[in-house]
Image (cartoon, rainbow over all chains, first blue to last red; front, side, top):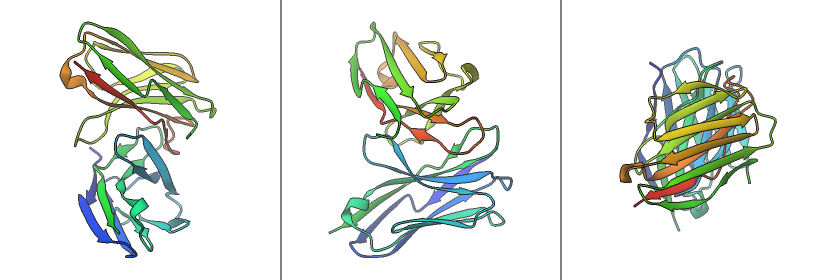
Length: 111
Length: 113
């Protein structure tokens, strides 16, 4: 059974810090990995999608990497801001199968 | 807006009521999904539709009844719900069941009283 875990479950950092969120998956035949952001009581907003043939994707202050061999993905947030406070979820996808979601990391960026 | 629209945004219903949640997308996607998110719990997949056909029912109680009249619209019909069914219900779509990537709606916050 495919499983996705995220560490840490919660993280609190002062504004301006660079930080890394971790995602681990058990499916070595991963097709892609997607990072989402969820604000309280809201839907999921897609941040970055990394195909299995790629090593990383960047969007603004966000950089996501994918290492299939170790079963890991990281989301790097540079120069964090209070507006980055949210829950971040990763999900791994495989062709013809449903995405498997991690439990999320709750991030608080303190002013 | 993400391209996936859910209505209503909030819903309060009694246990004997019948209501429906609606999801609409015009992204040209062929797969649509219903997820349930309860407080402090991971996302739970409920139903999957691919090209209007239900391909997955994740052991969901019959008081939840999905309907997919076409690839752009997905409904979740609710009747005789329980208070523990109170949750955020999220709709998502993808190009196909190809793991290419999901687009989520903003969700319907359901409270059963």
